[in-house]
Image 1 (spheres, one colour):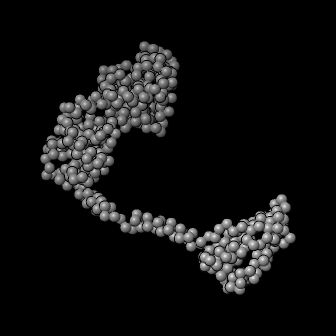
Image 2 (cartoon, rainbow, N blue to C red):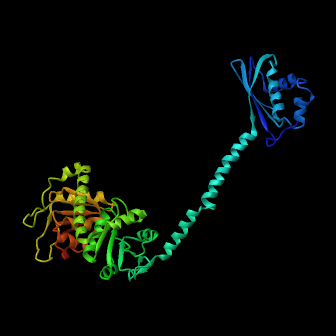
Image 3 (cartoon, rainbow, N blue to C red):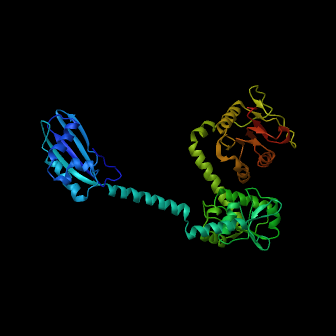
Length: 432
């Protein structure tokens, strides 16, 4: 028998069969050909239609259960709609298959072209989306790409530190100081070209020198990091005005409206200093309060520890720090075993976190801050800190700050400062 290619089929006849008995697939196919023979005339004879390829292979699936047989019949057709409908209706005249009563019901004739059309439409949507996204950018995207490339070319470098800056930094009397290169790009995007970046959180010498030549406005992020940068700027540069991004936002993510609003709201250095001091105190208190609530159990466990004692206590269990020869302080600080254990436990919990604990005289945890903010936090506290435990190396700067605010113990992973070079008691993981 001839077969019809699935590609050339235009319609598919879908029918179900219910047979009162058990029959096989050949019985059903034989009944379809035998009982429709001569029914529709020579032009619609199933055998002849198959030979000419206008009717495809008849697929029959049967399943016998509990003495009955159910299944389906699928007939592909390349006839027109009317002829295909007649062939499908002819199947329903079959009442017996083999020795059993049977009922065939054609529940639909599927137009293959509709399904293919749906696939074509779906695929066309995907192709169009890809073309719009990758191949054919709109005019706005083209304009933004060109503007971005121009802004990148406008960025220059200034001074010995090669700081990123806008093209008008030399001729402008007023200069805006931001933190990083991304901030410079964002301001250039909106036409502000007299801008320069510190390229980090530390203030380079170039900025200090520039502040004495230009009217310098510090434009910082609206977070704690921005406040700490301002604190450092106050001590090393001659800042004239202060502008801040909205709370919680960074300069690099501001819109044009937000940038101009922030610059219009700039304040003098005198007012800015008082605002910064107030904000840092509030933020520090909030940080300490939140950390104390989260770590209340740990805080309670160390809240009654004793203060360090000095060389008049000759306990053999005490751990003596090296003799201090700094200044006139020749006392030998003694760390009690309880303190030593607490310091060791805290240091071990901090390994790999780059965090630090700030402790009071009762060894209660005042707060936990990142190591990168430790020095600035100690400066803002001025007093009341008994010990510092942190995941990092003790350097000269931290030792000097700790001396200035009378910290007794500084505990770190290792130290580049010798015990004889400072008045504070330095302990490392090896010492513990």
